[in-house]
Image 1 (spheres, rainbow, N blue to C red):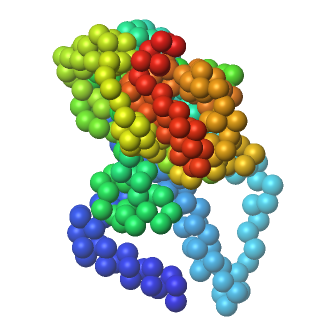
Image 2: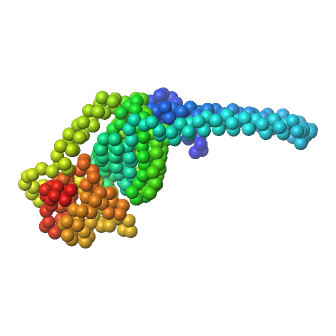
Image 3: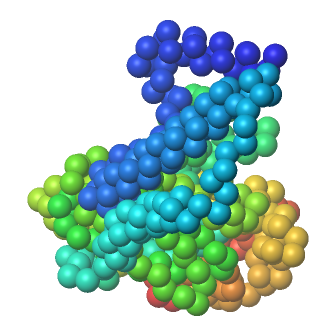
Length: 376
């Protein structure tokens, strides 16, 4: 009965036309790189070989069952230990394996060849964010789950996830790369094993603490391509999206120039000015919910045995300079946010102020952007 219902469902999808099938894709995506097209082509080649083998094997089997059924009083065949047949059904699989091994090996060699790259980006996985470091021009930033998705996923948020565009597949800072350029990636991780995977690129790579793995892409078509961590890297593993924005070379160069103007003309974005406790707390809560909530939780309770609590912690209630140093430099699995120029001194001052006064800490301490700039 269950299979009958499933069959009826599939038939109804067929009647629905192309639009219905768009969300019911069973095959691999073709992708937007030469590598992805090579992988897809080999996948289809192997699939049709398997289909041909299946048709031949099951065809012979069903033909034999019908024509040699018991009611016909069949006479058993006498080709047991026939050397010619033994040779034929041995040599045929050998040719099939060679036909599969040659293109597979060629594709793997090509996929692993990261030489002659036009640019290199180091990718570091953290729980649960990515850090991108453009080794050729000094751009570096964190890429985390966007605030709308992060807010909607919280238990009891009251936000309907279906109203969030690209729910759990959007980030605050996408990776930007130029089209028609060979981009080499170097992968590592700071805490646990992650895996960087964008289906349209045709491959995934593990990011392993203490090791460096490599991969490359050359995207032909401008667009936004989305993926996720493909490793079971922790409790909130599903909230670690990847967004890659591929743009023409001229647009990429304009993005680089704009990024440097915004983040390097005023180091850290520090500005003189009067900040009130209310302003710092409001902004600090936003920054905390973007960068800290996954590990330390919305109520500051942390994850026992994995990530320490902020509520009542010795760091949040102790020496301010030590607190600032840990946020800027990192500690253990926690990344140092001082290296991320997308997080301004105002944001850092606000989140430290928030941590020292939220969750019942109530120290009354206020950290200003100037305090962060003095420590950098």
